[in-house]
Length: 355
Image (cartoon, rainbow, N blue to C red; front, side, top):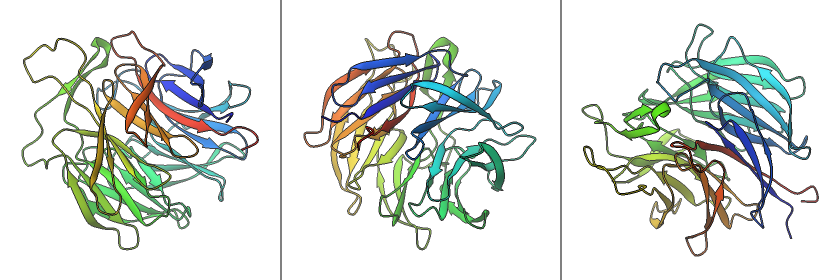
């Protein structure tokens, strides 16, 4: 039996849960994290996780104070062992780790110190460089498996940025009208996939509200973009009816795209409005399956064998466990179920020590 552990952060509960990835038992909870935990990445060599903190309260574009920290978590001791202060850079959202270079990369929002990618040495836990980007608010990002390039989405900015991580400079931009949400690279490094456009939302987290807004005129329909990393050109797209919130590429290459769904404007739903996870063939862009999960599905991670997807439900405060053979939800994990906005967000899988 695997000893793998799934770590799950609650953005609004400011907690970090540890679940046995096989039995799904909750093993431990770390309370009182720095506000507000967002995305997380694992450093297998040190058995540490790096957890970005983006805002002090609220959500993107709410005008609330921004955070500027990365928590360092010992995956075996199950405790925070350090906090990396990125000030004067602020609002780190997505975070990646390149084991070959031993560097942590995180995108930061525009501010007095600048905008782009902050480069942190994982050994010293100090900022060693930045990569300025022309588009504002570096938000979601991914690295190619060889650590040579980064692709960055900027929410409403109508481009995806491409950066050379070795030269530490921007290479160019890829047009993405209407902006973009999450972005990820295929395991073989050949393609990047992006969920577009940015979701047009009315946000009031304090009141537990996140609803659909009328998008700006000319905003394209929701779609998944496929980008060739050799040419940095869009080579395919798949259209959807509802907002795409996030995506992740599975170890076998299948693309999992999460979809926010909302009540129709002016109506009061009888209960929760489930979201969906779409599974897409990476070559043909054929829709393989759509799986109904809980409210506002967001971050997705996978079991070590790629047979299971863990989907963080941002509003419900739960994690849907999806079997990728049967395309069925087989369990639901309680991260912060109960509040009006549970805030389940960042996750990472920690392999057992003998893996």
